[in-house]
Length: 207
View 1 (cartoon, rainbow, N blue to C red):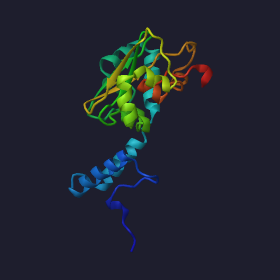
View 2: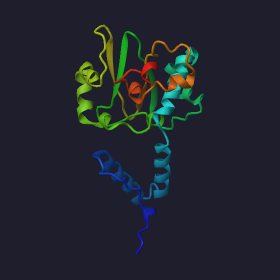
View 3: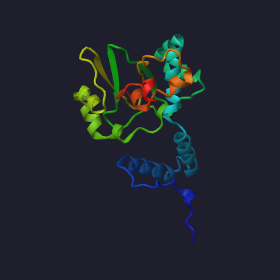
View 4: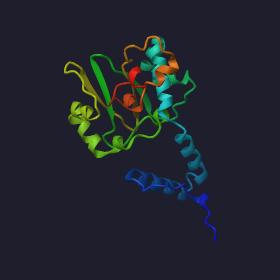
């Protein structure tokens, strides 16, 4: 007899991680309780899968070229990104922070994997790992060094703990030598990791 796959979420085609097992269990429970239908879950998964760091990169590029927009982004991130047609649908507050020559922000979720998925897509596995979540709080410079980011001693490092109620978007330092680049070209320099704060934006020579 043919199995009907419309009564449960689509299973991944790879060995499931601990976090995927948790998501699968919650989805199944919500469907069994009649709170959501499998089709509603599928549509939400497809919507989230369509999100990528490109959306966040576009926001950063606009902030680099438009000081007024950057001010609005820092004051009210959700409102500012709506100007670009990006709807951050999560109920959590979104806070944008700016890295400078004197202050560097890095984001972590010490409890699980809270993350601005509406702008950056799915979080990387390392972000969800206990190793990163526990170590970046006590030795941020050491962890950043392992990512290849060596910060000068006089740069203050601030670790921001993302929660279910608050997510963070890091505005990385704009690379030198990009004054004549278009907004689209600038967006290509912005990486997911630079918007988490474990890396700098790419330089034009490394594109």
